[in-house]
Image (cartoon, rainbow, N blue to C red; front, side):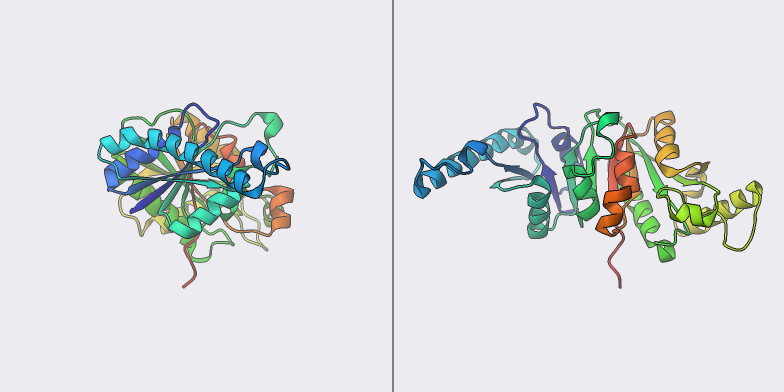
Length: 307
Protein backbone atom coordinates (compact mmCIF):
# COMPACT_ATOMS: atom_id res chain seq x y z
CA UNK A 1 0.00 0.00 0.00
CA UNK A 2 1.48 3.34 -1.08
CA UNK A 3 -1.25 5.98 -0.75
CA UNK A 4 -4.30 6.27 1.49
CA UNK A 5 -6.80 9.02 0.69
CA UNK A 6 -8.80 10.23 3.70
CA UNK A 7 -12.00 12.17 3.08
CA UNK A 8 -12.33 14.63 5.96
CA UNK A 9 -15.48 16.31 7.25
CA UNK A 10 -15.00 20.02 8.04
CA UNK A 11 -18.30 20.07 9.97
CA UNK A 12 -17.29 17.30 12.42
CA UNK A 13 -15.40 17.64 15.68
CA UNK A 14 -13.95 14.11 15.53
CA UNK A 15 -12.24 12.48 12.57
CA UNK A 16 -12.12 8.71 13.20
CA UNK A 17 -11.23 8.12 9.55
CA UNK A 18 -7.90 9.86 10.06
CA UNK A 19 -6.99 7.85 13.14
CA UNK A 20 -7.74 4.51 11.50
CA UNK A 21 -6.12 5.47 8.19
CA UNK A 22 -3.05 6.69 10.08
CA UNK A 23 -2.74 3.33 11.85
CA UNK A 24 -2.80 1.58 8.47
CA UNK A 25 -0.23 4.06 7.14
CA UNK A 26 2.05 3.42 10.12
CA UNK A 27 1.86 -0.33 9.62
CA UNK A 28 2.37 -0.24 5.82
CA UNK A 29 4.55 2.82 5.28
CA UNK A 30 1.87 4.39 3.08
CA UNK A 31 1.50 8.12 2.55
CA UNK A 32 -1.61 9.68 4.09
CA UNK A 33 -3.43 12.25 1.94
CA UNK A 34 -6.02 14.30 3.84
CA UNK A 35 -8.66 15.63 1.46
CA UNK A 36 -11.25 18.31 2.10
CA UNK A 37 -13.99 19.35 -0.30
CA UNK A 38 -15.96 22.39 0.79
CA UNK A 39 -17.78 25.50 -0.42
CA UNK A 40 -18.95 28.56 1.46
CA UNK A 41 -22.49 29.29 0.26
CA UNK A 42 -21.91 32.99 0.99
CA UNK A 43 -19.25 33.01 -1.72
CA UNK A 44 -21.04 31.06 -4.42
CA UNK A 45 -22.64 34.02 -6.18
CA UNK A 46 -22.12 37.44 -4.66
CA UNK A 47 -23.43 40.11 -7.00
CA UNK A 48 -21.85 42.89 -4.95
CA UNK A 49 -18.32 41.49 -5.35
CA UNK A 50 -16.31 41.84 -8.52
CA UNK A 51 -14.82 38.60 -9.92
CA UNK A 52 -11.37 39.38 -8.55
CA UNK A 53 -12.62 40.00 -5.02
CA UNK A 54 -14.80 36.88 -5.17
CA UNK A 55 -11.87 34.76 -6.32
CA UNK A 56 -9.68 36.15 -3.54
CA UNK A 57 -12.37 35.46 -0.93
CA UNK A 58 -12.69 31.87 -2.12
CA UNK A 59 -8.91 31.43 -2.09
CA UNK A 60 -8.79 32.71 1.50
CA UNK A 61 -11.56 30.30 2.48
CA UNK A 62 -9.71 27.33 0.99
CA UNK A 63 -6.46 28.49 2.62
CA UNK A 64 -8.24 28.31 5.97
CA UNK A 65 -9.29 24.76 5.13
CA UNK A 66 -5.70 23.83 4.26
CA UNK A 67 -4.56 25.28 7.59
CA UNK A 68 -7.23 23.18 9.31
CA UNK A 69 -6.00 20.07 7.50
CA UNK A 70 -2.44 20.95 8.48
CA UNK A 71 -3.48 20.96 12.11
CA UNK A 72 -5.04 17.52 11.72
CA UNK A 73 -1.92 16.24 9.96
CA UNK A 74 0.61 17.61 12.45
CA UNK A 75 0.43 14.93 15.20
CA UNK A 76 0.63 12.12 12.67
CA UNK A 77 3.53 13.72 10.84
CA UNK A 78 5.28 14.06 14.21
CA UNK A 79 4.69 10.32 14.71
CA UNK A 80 6.56 9.57 11.47
CA UNK A 81 3.69 9.26 9.00
CA UNK A 82 4.12 10.97 5.65
CA UNK A 83 1.10 13.27 5.31
CA UNK A 84 -0.14 15.40 2.41
CA UNK A 85 -3.10 17.79 2.50
CA UNK A 86 -5.42 18.93 -0.27
CA UNK A 87 -8.46 21.19 -0.14
CA UNK A 88 -10.68 21.98 -3.10
CA UNK A 89 -13.63 24.26 -3.80
CA UNK A 90 -15.88 21.66 -5.31
CA UNK A 91 -19.11 19.72 -4.96
CA UNK A 92 -21.10 17.61 -4.60
CA UNK A 93 -18.75 15.82 -2.24
CA UNK A 94 -18.95 12.41 -3.93
CA UNK A 95 -18.08 13.90 -7.33
CA UNK A 96 -15.14 15.80 -5.85
CA UNK A 97 -13.89 12.63 -4.12
CA UNK A 98 -14.17 10.61 -7.33
CA UNK A 99 -12.23 13.28 -9.23
CA UNK A 100 -9.52 13.20 -6.56
CA UNK A 101 -9.40 9.40 -6.72
CA UNK A 102 -8.95 9.64 -10.48
CA UNK A 103 -6.07 12.09 -10.05
CA UNK A 104 -4.05 10.49 -7.24
CA UNK A 105 -4.98 6.80 -7.75
CA UNK A 106 -5.00 5.80 -4.04
CA UNK A 107 -4.74 2.22 -2.86
CA UNK A 108 -7.48 2.89 -0.31
CA UNK A 109 -10.11 5.57 0.33
CA UNK A 110 -11.18 6.10 3.95
CA UNK A 111 -14.20 8.12 5.03
CA UNK A 112 -16.23 8.62 8.19
CA UNK A 113 -19.80 7.45 8.18
CA UNK A 114 -22.56 7.55 10.75
CA UNK A 115 -25.34 5.23 11.81
CA UNK A 116 -28.42 6.19 9.81
CA UNK A 117 -31.68 6.00 11.74
CA UNK A 118 -34.65 4.06 10.33
CA UNK A 119 -36.15 7.19 8.82
CA UNK A 120 -33.05 7.74 6.68
CA UNK A 121 -32.79 4.21 5.34
CA UNK A 122 -33.65 3.95 1.68
CA UNK A 123 -32.59 7.51 0.82
CA UNK A 124 -30.17 6.65 -1.98
CA UNK A 125 -28.67 10.10 -2.43
CA UNK A 126 -25.98 10.15 0.24
CA UNK A 127 -22.28 10.58 -0.44
CA UNK A 128 -21.61 7.12 1.00
CA UNK A 129 -24.08 5.48 -1.37
CA UNK A 130 -22.55 7.11 -4.44
CA UNK A 131 -19.05 6.18 -3.36
CA UNK A 132 -20.07 2.58 -2.72
CA UNK A 133 -21.44 2.42 -6.24
CA UNK A 134 -18.74 4.33 -8.13
CA UNK A 135 -15.44 4.49 -6.23
CA UNK A 136 -12.92 2.38 -8.20
CA UNK A 137 -10.57 2.01 -5.23
CA UNK A 138 -11.26 -0.05 -2.10
CA UNK A 139 -13.49 2.08 0.14
CA UNK A 140 -13.29 1.91 3.95
CA UNK A 141 -16.28 3.52 5.65
CA UNK A 142 -15.54 3.88 9.35
CA UNK A 143 -17.68 4.55 12.39
CA UNK A 144 -16.58 6.29 15.59
CA UNK A 145 -15.82 3.19 17.70
CA UNK A 146 -12.07 2.39 17.78
CA UNK A 147 -10.78 -0.98 16.67
CA UNK A 148 -9.79 -3.62 19.20
CA UNK A 149 -6.09 -4.16 19.74
CA UNK A 150 -6.46 -7.28 17.60
CA UNK A 151 -9.30 -6.33 15.24
CA UNK A 152 -11.89 -8.94 14.35
CA UNK A 153 -12.43 -8.90 10.61
CA UNK A 154 -15.27 -10.64 8.79
CA UNK A 155 -15.05 -11.38 5.06
CA UNK A 156 -18.49 -11.81 3.48
CA UNK A 157 -18.40 -14.05 0.41
CA UNK A 158 -21.03 -15.43 -1.95
CA UNK A 159 -19.51 -18.29 -3.96
CA UNK A 160 -21.36 -19.22 -7.12
CA UNK A 161 -23.08 -15.84 -7.51
CA UNK A 162 -24.23 -15.51 -11.15
CA UNK A 163 -22.81 -11.97 -11.39
CA UNK A 164 -19.36 -13.13 -10.23
CA UNK A 165 -18.17 -15.79 -12.68
CA UNK A 166 -15.08 -17.53 -11.40
CA UNK A 167 -15.66 -16.04 -7.93
CA UNK A 168 -13.23 -13.25 -8.81
CA UNK A 169 -14.86 -10.79 -6.44
CA UNK A 170 -14.92 -13.32 -3.61
CA UNK A 171 -11.21 -14.00 -4.05
CA UNK A 172 -10.55 -10.25 -3.97
CA UNK A 173 -12.57 -9.97 -0.74
CA UNK A 174 -10.61 -12.82 0.86
CA UNK A 175 -7.28 -11.35 -0.23
CA UNK A 176 -8.26 -7.96 1.22
CA UNK A 177 -9.23 -9.62 4.50
CA UNK A 178 -5.97 -11.54 4.65
CA UNK A 179 -3.95 -8.36 4.00
CA UNK A 180 -5.78 -6.50 6.77
CA UNK A 181 -5.21 -9.33 9.22
CA UNK A 182 -1.51 -9.24 8.41
CA UNK A 183 -1.26 -5.47 8.75
CA UNK A 184 -3.37 -5.16 11.91
CA UNK A 185 -2.44 -8.48 13.56
CA UNK A 186 -6.13 -9.26 13.63
CA UNK A 187 -8.40 -12.28 13.36
CA UNK A 188 -10.31 -13.22 10.21
CA UNK A 189 -13.58 -15.07 9.83
CA UNK A 190 -15.21 -15.92 6.50
CA UNK A 191 -19.00 -15.91 6.27
CA UNK A 192 -21.31 -17.04 3.50
CA UNK A 193 -24.93 -16.04 4.05
CA UNK A 194 -27.33 -17.98 1.83
CA UNK A 195 -31.08 -18.23 1.62
CA UNK A 196 -32.55 -21.39 0.02
CA UNK A 197 -35.35 -19.95 -2.10
CA UNK A 198 -36.76 -20.34 -5.57
CA UNK A 199 -34.19 -18.98 -8.11
CA UNK A 200 -36.73 -16.63 -9.71
CA UNK A 201 -37.45 -15.04 -6.34
CA UNK A 202 -33.77 -14.78 -5.44
CA UNK A 203 -33.01 -13.04 -8.75
CA UNK A 204 -35.52 -10.35 -7.85
CA UNK A 205 -34.16 -9.68 -4.37
CA UNK A 206 -30.59 -8.46 -3.74
CA UNK A 207 -28.70 -10.05 -0.89
CA UNK A 208 -30.46 -13.40 -1.43
CA UNK A 209 -27.98 -15.77 -3.13
CA UNK A 210 -29.44 -18.70 -5.05
CA UNK A 211 -28.82 -21.97 -3.22
CA UNK A 212 -30.63 -24.33 -5.57
CA UNK A 213 -30.51 -25.03 -9.28
CA UNK A 214 -33.30 -24.38 -11.82
CA UNK A 215 -35.29 -27.44 -12.78
CA UNK A 216 -34.74 -29.45 -9.62
CA UNK A 217 -36.21 -29.47 -6.15
CA UNK A 218 -33.84 -29.90 -3.24
CA UNK A 219 -34.53 -30.25 0.44
CA UNK A 220 -32.92 -28.01 3.08
CA UNK A 221 -30.12 -30.48 3.75
CA UNK A 222 -29.26 -30.71 0.04
CA UNK A 223 -29.21 -26.94 -0.29
CA UNK A 224 -26.99 -26.60 2.76
CA UNK A 225 -24.57 -29.24 1.45
CA UNK A 226 -24.38 -27.53 -1.94
CA UNK A 227 -23.67 -24.15 -0.36
CA UNK A 228 -21.06 -25.75 1.90
CA UNK A 229 -19.38 -27.37 -1.11
CA UNK A 230 -19.20 -24.05 -2.97
CA UNK A 231 -17.68 -22.38 0.08
CA UNK A 232 -15.10 -25.16 0.47
CA UNK A 233 -14.17 -24.90 -3.22
CA UNK A 234 -13.68 -21.15 -2.88
CA UNK A 235 -11.45 -21.54 0.17
CA UNK A 236 -9.32 -24.25 -1.41
CA UNK A 237 -7.16 -21.45 -2.83
CA UNK A 238 -6.75 -19.80 0.57
CA UNK A 239 -4.92 -22.20 2.91
CA UNK A 240 -5.73 -21.72 6.56
CA UNK A 241 -9.14 -20.12 6.09
CA UNK A 242 -11.26 -23.27 6.00
CA UNK A 243 -11.35 -23.47 9.80
CA UNK A 244 -12.46 -19.83 9.97
CA UNK A 245 -15.40 -20.29 7.56
CA UNK A 246 -19.01 -20.06 8.66
CA UNK A 247 -22.16 -20.83 6.68
CA UNK A 248 -25.22 -18.96 7.94
CA UNK A 249 -28.74 -19.18 6.60
CA UNK A 250 -30.57 -15.96 5.81
CA UNK A 251 -30.37 -12.95 3.53
CA UNK A 252 -27.05 -11.14 3.64
CA UNK A 253 -28.60 -7.87 4.82
CA UNK A 254 -30.09 -9.64 7.84
CA UNK A 255 -27.61 -12.42 8.63
CA UNK A 256 -24.38 -10.45 8.31
CA UNK A 257 -25.29 -7.64 10.75
CA UNK A 258 -26.42 -10.28 13.26
CA UNK A 259 -23.16 -12.19 12.80
CA UNK A 260 -21.05 -9.04 13.19
CA UNK A 261 -22.91 -8.11 16.37
CA UNK A 262 -22.62 -11.56 17.94
CA UNK A 263 -18.92 -11.85 17.09
CA UNK A 264 -18.10 -8.23 17.96
CA UNK A 265 -16.58 -7.61 14.56
CA UNK A 266 -14.54 -4.46 14.04
CA UNK A 267 -14.71 -4.54 10.27
CA UNK A 268 -16.77 -6.26 7.57
CA UNK A 269 -15.25 -6.78 4.12
CA UNK A 270 -17.93 -6.99 1.43
CA UNK A 271 -18.19 -6.66 -2.32
CA UNK A 272 -20.03 -4.22 -4.56
CA UNK A 273 -20.91 -4.85 -8.19
CA UNK A 274 -21.90 -2.24 -10.74
CA UNK A 275 -25.55 -2.32 -11.69
CA UNK A 276 -27.79 -0.13 -13.80
CA UNK A 277 -28.69 3.26 -12.31
CA UNK A 278 -32.39 2.42 -12.51
CA UNK A 279 -31.82 -0.82 -10.58
CA UNK A 280 -29.76 1.04 -7.98
CA UNK A 281 -32.36 3.73 -7.40
CA UNK A 282 -35.27 1.33 -7.15
CA UNK A 283 -33.70 -1.44 -5.07
CA UNK A 284 -30.32 -0.25 -3.79
CA UNK A 285 -27.21 -2.37 -3.20
CA UNK A 286 -26.45 -4.99 -0.58
CA UNK A 287 -23.36 -3.08 0.57
CA UNK A 288 -25.31 0.15 1.03
CA UNK A 289 -28.06 -1.62 2.95
CA UNK A 290 -25.45 -3.30 5.15
CA UNK A 291 -23.90 0.06 6.04
CA UNK A 292 -27.02 1.09 7.93
CA UNK A 293 -27.30 -2.20 9.79
CA UNK A 294 -23.84 -3.37 10.79
CA UNK A 295 -22.25 -2.03 14.00
CA UNK A 296 -18.77 -2.38 12.48
CA UNK A 297 -16.81 -0.54 9.82
CA UNK A 298 -17.31 -1.57 6.19
CA UNK A 299 -14.59 -2.17 3.60
CA UNK A 300 -16.12 -2.27 0.11
CA UNK A 301 -14.20 -4.20 -2.55
CA UNK A 302 -14.97 -4.02 -6.25
CA UNK A 303 -14.35 -6.81 -8.79
CA UNK A 304 -10.85 -6.85 -10.30
CA UNK A 305 -10.64 -5.39 -13.82
CA UNK A 306 -11.34 -7.83 -16.63
CA UNK A 307 -8.31 -9.43 -18.21
